[in-house]
Image 1 (cartoon, rainbow, N blue to C red):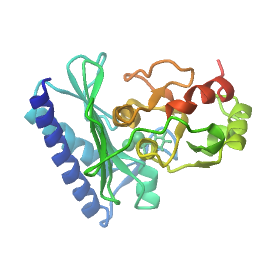
Image 2 (cartoon, rainbow, N blue to C red; image 1 turned 30 degrees about the vertical axis):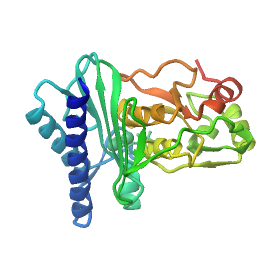
Image 3 (cartoon, rainbow, N blue to C red; image 1 turned 180 degrees about the vertical axis):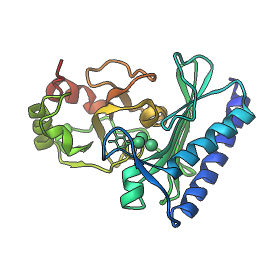
Image 4 (cartoon, rainbow, N blue to C red; image 1 turned 90 degrees about the vertical axis):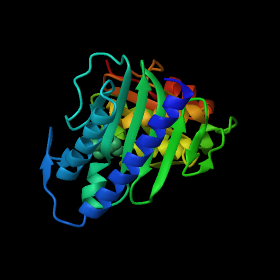
Length: 268
Ligand code: IPD
Ligand code: CA
Ligand code: CA
Ligand code: CA
């Protein structure tokens, strides 16, 4: 993908994302079907499905050699990340979408041979588009975002964290997470992994800590966070696998290893 091709794909993706956002804002005021998936709290609506179909159809018609990895099953079955792969979460924060009608995002990461080249996170109701191309910085709408400060202390940090991880759970020892909660200045939980990434990117939060996310939750956020000098790894410090679910520590570099070394004890 040369710079010119990348720019064309970027412009096309942006146009589809804004159009999809407009469709969501229109359709959400009419009745829509809500179903559950793996558990009673795992919601999906027909608008999630239609939005993913909109992306899959457009991508396939325009770029027949690109592949799609999406949450709702309209993409391709991937066993590798060769070539260009669009990693799409049509609505990240479906529970917020259903219950609050706000605080949800469209997340699109475009990867070439496993390397994140383009990232978009669109706060649909706020009409705010976070956007990045690898090596060219991250933007909030048209405003270039600053590099993250390197002299942040964990004691002065705001950390995105779901309270679930402070309770008994199968993935991480709750005691370490409870100590993290006590140590930091404050915690926040927004219910959209993509938006939580975006808040770390813009410096509103210093870290986002969670024990289980799918590739479409993080694909765009990782590209954006790299562009402001942040870092994303699994909770043991190893590299995120974009074909699997991962634990995620996405943060300012100044506090990343302290979170992992002092506060995360993964269960075997
Ligand atoms: C969910 C949201 C939520 C996170 C869940 C995700 P969805 O995505 O990002 O914040 O805690 O793990 O599954 O299902 O609303 O796209
Ligand atoms: Ca979901
Ligand atoms: Ca999601
Ligand atoms: Ca989703």
